[in-house]
Image (cartoon, rainbow, N blue to C red; front, side, top):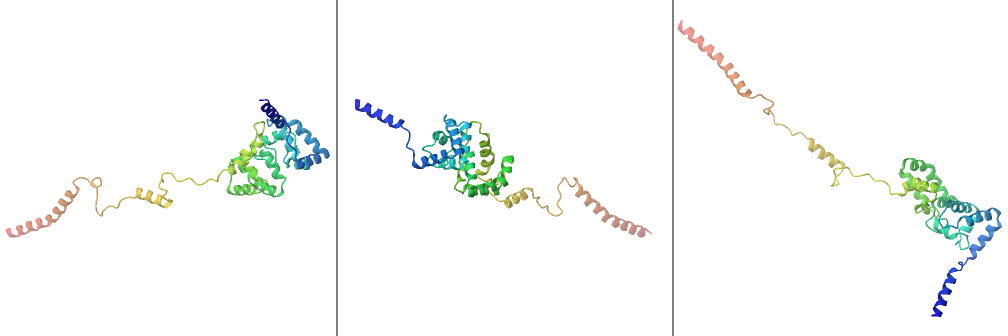
Length: 258
C-alpha cells in the first residue's frame, strides 16, 4: 500500500514539473531578450496572457509580439518556453497550431509575400461587395481560393474569433470571409417543373394550354345565329321564286279571256 502511494506521489510531482523547453525555443527567447523592442513586447504578453479566457489584452499582446521580427521567430517555434503559451494556443495565437484567430491568420498572411499578394487582390476587389452586400461574385470566389491555396492563407478557411470584445475579428470572418467561403449560388429550378423539363418544354406546354381549337367552315354556334334564322331565309327564297311564276300565270289568263 505504501509503495502505491509513493508511485502516485511521484506521478503527481512529475506532472507538476514544467514542460521541457526545446533548444530552438530557448534560442529564440534569448534573441528576443537581446532586442529592446522585442523584450518589452514579450513582457506585456507575459503579464496579459495568464487568465486562460482570451482577454483583449492578451490578443493585442500576441499580435504586437508577432509584428516584431524576433518575436515572430519566437512564436514560430514549438513555444515550449513562451510565457502564457497555453492561453495563446487556446485562443488561436500560435502560428503552428490550428484553428487560428482570424485577425492572427490575417497578420500571418500579410507577413508572407505570396499570401499577401493574393490577399490584397481579394481585399481590393471584393471587400466592398462582401461587407456591404453580403454577396460574393464569382471572381471573388476565385481570388479567395487563390489566397487559401497558399501555405499561410489556408488558415482563413477555419479561423475563429473570441467572445471578448472581438468586433474586428467578427467583421473579418462574418462579412469579408464567410460569403466567399460558402458554396457558389446556383440557379433555382423554375416553379411547376418537377419533371425537370427544359424551358422549351415548358413553353410548349403553356402554348398547348392556351391554344384555340380551329372551327369548321361555315359552322356557327347557336349563340352566334338567332333561333329560326335558317327557316326564315328559306321562306324568303321560295317567295322570290314563286312571284315571277304567279305573274306569268295571271298574264296568260288575262289574254285568254280576251
